[in-house]
Length: 234
Length: 290
Ligand SMILES: Nc1ncnc2c1ncn2[C@@H]1O[C@H](COP(=O)(O)OP(=O)(O)O)[C@@H](O)[C@H]1O
Ligand SMILES: [Mg+2]
Image (cartoon, rainbow over the protein chains, first blue to last red):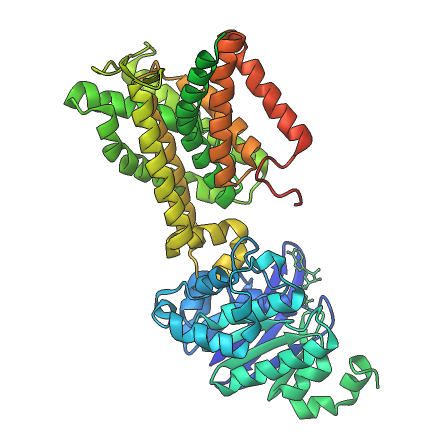
């Protein structure tokens, strides 16, 4: 579905991604784990075309992503829920969700998707008239994911959805990711919460200072000695 | 001085303030979406004035009727400026943005000078100096008419931004450009629409004041300054703030002219401006953080 080949990227003189190969197949949950600053967000920004790579190829269902602008990537069905949520602060919950379904193909299914989001996150329904900027971190994360789902994604890119959430809520978010995947949405999940994300992932990539150093199934990596030492404190 | 004179001044201040509000709202929309201060704003208004003047003298179209032509023409004009120039400098150094918009303004005012000479033009309609009375207060007919048009435009604009997908997408772009891109919003197109709207509001303001103001190529610079004061007073990027700011400046000018003298009205305007910024640095409707 998504295929990245030898992606190189730098911010000015600072080289951040080196020869990244990454693949996501339809129906999977794939996770990219790694320490802070490893280049996880930068990888997603490349996929969403918020930044332009130095070299390498990226295709989605055969479509060359490197020829598209950000908004066209969304039209292809690749939707990112960014790190830090990036809710529209001066818009209500309802308006934020409406913006999620801005692209023409999603506009037609606005009502249906809105109902779906509200079953997934009943809390958002209660808060529909509240301004996005005034909600708690957890509620903003629900809104950010809900807003992403409004676009009818085929592939959902999630950047650290568990960041800054209470432990109880973290468990909740991972359950919801599994549920979204069950409903037919393929998931590329970027996380620092290595244990939880490997637990739910079909396959995983480990990123260290801009390079893919390990890849395998979620279960394999959970039992991998390097992972245990470096990330799980065992 | 009697209270009816004061009342009179307040009313005409509000009426003029409506037009100021249009200019300020245009500037604030452009700033909100692009984070670019448009120093050519008054010059866009000047273009609107000459357009109105041309339509009136050459084709005999009434200035208030001509807004039907001015609005779309200025929208397209602004959109082209955005597409050709401003879209290239979004996110670049502030001094570059300032130079570009000042330069564009100079090109506009100098082109007007070439085309129309620097003579002051007066657009006299049959009703330019007519007025009517309500409860003993005399109200200028062109001012009242322009205020009415301003009010309709403001309401339409409010509806556009609150209720339509495109309007909401422009607000989203202003609040978080990157997040807007991730929603599938074509932010470059939103910027073109935003600048088009800003230009068409400025041009409309020009059309509306043309029956009561001198028209000359440099008329814009004073209005750029005024628009800037109004926008900062209301809070950069706030449409409600700019509307309020426009009305306040209109009233202060008009009341200042009758209570002190018209030479002092600008001093009064800037005193109020500084006072508000001392008390509330982000402006009336501005967010105090960021
Ligand atoms: N806008 C930017 N400009 C310059 N360097 C950046 C920028 N964003 C991130 N970086 C650098 O790129 C590297 C990778 O960052 P990032 O992709 O955000 O890592 P992660 O998401 O894995 O924490 C880091 O060294 C970071 O400092
Ligand atoms: Mg990150």
